[in-house]
Length: 113
Image (cartoon, rainbow, N blue to C red; front, side, top):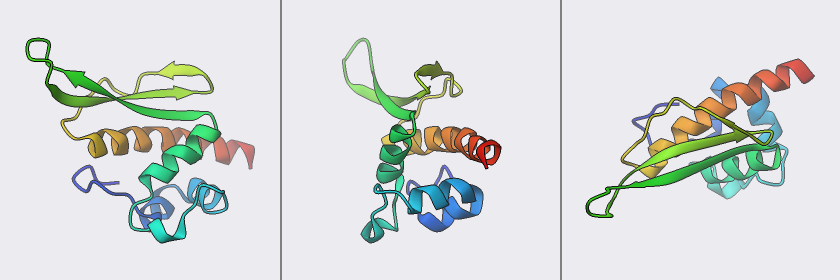
């Protein structure tokens, strides 16, 4: 998934994470009319699988203006460090977290297969 592109489609997901894509496509979270950007639905799907992705806003201490977003990840109820990066754009933060979580989810699917 490219961090310069702020969307995620099913073909990109299939290419990088085929097992996760198959599980997602078979789930109730799948929305065929949203194929051009599945990030929101994918976050919901992963949440049901106990892989939580949240993007927390970061505010400037002096002005209280939002300056960015930090991805927060929780897997099976445990907080997981996803690299400590923050992003100026919400979609970039979400895609970064999804990439991290999907890598782990894909490996779990290989083990369970």
